[in-house]
Image (cartoon, rainbow, N blue to C red; front, top):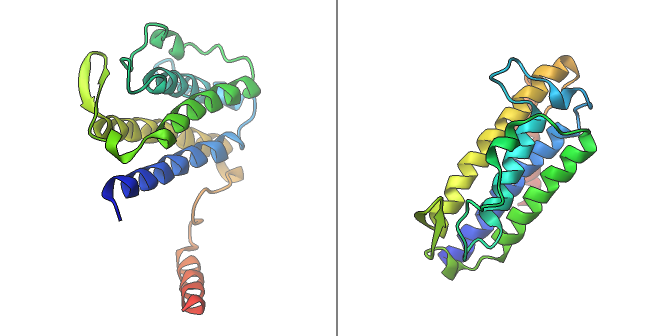
Length: 180
């Protein structure tokens, strides 16, 4: 097995998992929920989505050939809460992820050690991918946290429900034993 190909396979799965957490949270939110903020210093889900999408489109368009901070990006505008609807927010979310995943899925193992620039700073492709994994996972974590707070007892868990770990573990062990 070639290490570069395996890394790309694993990292594609990790990013898809991060996106899925965001998707499953966003699906639980109402129109009003996407604009909720704890205070003026906080970001709403809509703002976080705009920021992540803006970052993805800037960083991952012409990824191997141009600086990741495109002149067309207006980062400050990403933090204005001007998303008009949940559907507009989802469209923005999908635009960013489609740009990013399209580029990521098109990379070959020989690309991993190539140099790219972000704000004039050189990174290997591998470093750029890892940098973005941290960034995107952090923001999706914020989206999930906001969703859990807003939905409270109506929250549909994204993982093993509280108090169900043993049940889950025993169910998984039974499934594993049946396969052998």
